[in-house]
Length: 178
Image 1 (tube, helix red, strand yellow):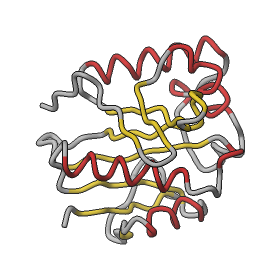
Image 2 (cartoon, one colour):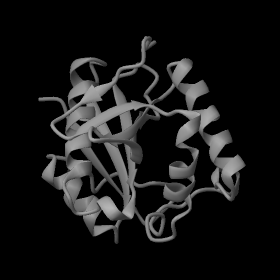
Image 3 (cartoon, rainbow, N blue to C red):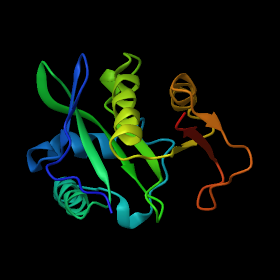
Image 4 (cartoon, rainbow, N blue to C red):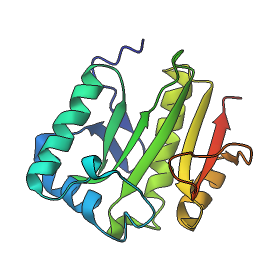
């Protein structure tokens, strides 16, 4: 079992990755409800946010999972502005904690600026070096070209033999520790 106390904050040249706070609810609401950001993401009804209370409940639920070491979920912040501009997480850990899935989203105004690349580099390094993961997977919609390119840029390889049974439009990428 992973032990993530205190919560691992990560830093890069421009970014500070930290645990979600209730005060992030406005930004989480915007990110999780924006139609353009979410156009390629299928979320079951029970995981959809429809109002600010839903954003608060989401943050509380995520932080409960963080506290139980079931997920590592970061708020992405620019160092110059302490405001959530996106999220990135490691979750869906294998039973032996050797594999995890990465997931991410980013506010529209920060797309195409290298921010998610920078955040993903931090999370990959953390996953392999601190959590001793052997493999990180990523599920992304086949039409989400930006996400596919981000994964390829970070040396993820498409696993053409794997299928996402819950979403046939998803491609599964993998990054093995070298």
